[in-house]
Image (cartoon, rainbow, N blue to C red):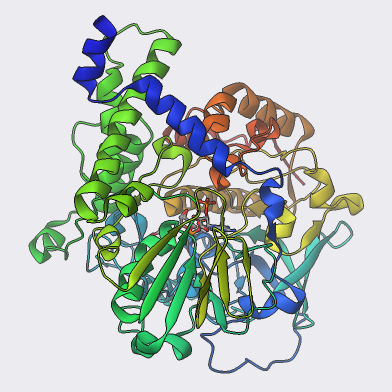
Length: 600
Ligand code: NDP
């Protein structure tokens, strides 16, 4: 009776939901895990061609020397370049595959693309550039323009090499420098190298039957073909008015571009394997009065406030006050850690209930916004909120009320195959003029595979070999055997919901270390064996990696496609959270002895 009462109070039955979550996960689980996708190369390399450059830059191979080479011209590379420039420690060359700065925002120009974290927090260096974005969640063209403005402001165009891909780099102990080789025949050298390759930089395609036999038009969302669709990032895809379009995938990208495809295409078929959770967006233009009232230090304060709240901490006010901060506020208020002595099991139970409650709300949103009950039911996500990236959009779900929009729910199985004329799913063929792959990016494969090259450090050691059994670093940034090399990524470092926040802290840390090397007239900085070992042990000890949580999740790139492994503990980010990590590296800098590093 007591239990009945609690179910009535809650409005749902936790046991029934647990069973439903397991059932949905089991439908989706597959033995091949990450192997279901294949590396985009060879016959498929046109999927990663750059559709945005007007012409290829022709230049002679470079064999010159700069102080610092940064690989990647996205926010990671731009922030690293900016902070090193501010520290005044020498010449910087950014090497970038695309035709300009921007990284993710250079490539992802699909209609509707926008940042899903508040732009006042997400866009880096706003104060340094005296810039306030136009909207609370600003759209991709403004983010791309801001990337270029950072490049201009910090003079990063001067030595930059665009349309250039690194193919390998090698440390010379004799010369105490790195030689960087590229697909343009370059063999340039630098005292220091920084890898800022980005977390989601390699588009992936599903390894399904017939993928090479389809006769219609195809492209990946990160290389949008506006010549084929017409229109631009703001929509108006007029050429699709006569086309039957299929889009494979229902992740964060599709949530943003479906409303535009729905408006323009003659017929739109959305092939779904797992639905996303889609909450309210409520985007709005920036209030000019508010923008004019901002005081110096506003952006860092807002970033810190957001980061504290979304990593489970407490703050007196919630400056951003959106879906992200609400998720964590709900979880925290349910548990009300302050003043209560709860056992870890009680905390876990309360967190699960808060999660059920939130996801019930998300599921009821599908019911309210989608007229056809079967379609609404198929669009409901049955898993815990952080099994996948939470999405926010006000137009995605209502798009399924349009008569030209069809959800093809594959019940967790995915599409069966491609034929010459279209896609087969649930045993039925849908004939299509165009197939858009919204199948995401490589995650969970080797760091060197995702970067597209290996590094050869001291004594011929390769990074691939060194990290074969798990990442080994100090603070996630440096690894022994690879002197004067910094790696901007989230493993063994601070992970933030707003990615550029962590990159900014890493960039400041790199700039500090380079500054200290210059002061000490040291040519080489390298992690000590003890420093590295101690950090790896600390990462494992602090790990919050919960195998049971991860295993219970529907498969996806958050849990290595349903195969969480113990090396995830070692490769995970700092378990006490990003705020403590940033405090820790700041204290390390203030202490001043460069503990765990040797300078020579
Ligand atoms: P995702 O990896 O999130 O989604 C890929 C989609 O393809 C999933 O729905 C997946 O299904 C589906 N899929 C893969 N293989 C098949 C198949 N064989 N049959 C049917 N469906 C298949 O990629 P996205 O590009 O959507 O997003 C990647 C990340 O980029 C996001 O998680 C987010 O971090 C970031 N992003 C950020 C934005 C921002 O504003 N900051 C905006 C857009 C993206 P399943 O779920 O079952 O695996």
